[in-house]
Length: 247
Image (cartoon, rainbow, N blue to C red; front, side, top):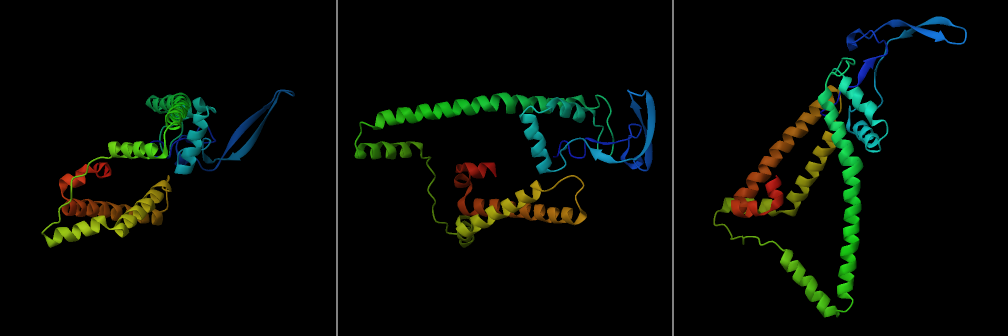
């Protein structure tokens, strides 16, 4: 959406390039090959998108799904390359670097992803087979011991949390470890993701303002969560969790 929104538009009158000039009517000729005559017809000018486009998440997913299936993906690639920008028509070979996105997506989606998925399934079936071959001759106690040993080997060590003497740090730790606070943050993240997914090309002013308020609130909430977690847990314990590193 961010790369190609507003593109792929053009006027049905080939002589019109800008959206602002795509008004009124124009004359189009129709040739009859049987009778050898040519007729003319007055048509209203319309500014329309080529096929689906990338104006919002739904249309982008539909377009990428067609490209992944190999359905006329070259036509969509050439149309995107020729698109001169929002509010403008098509210019041949205007932005040839855009073709790299489609070529990379087809290679990753059509070839590599399918092969990786099939290889992963084969590996899982082979792993299950080896696991069953080894556990069929074991007793229930032996299987439980091996299962517990695997859990202990895969478990990452977390630095112990010492109680803070500072009342402020204890309060911050209680907030950071509260299940209600974690659920609240997760719900806010889902609301923010839903807002971003529904944001498209040329949205309404009211929707833009609502989306801006949601983004500001989420930035403030993220900063609050990070500060409270670092103050309450301490930097070593905070950095020991991989999800915190992502944040």
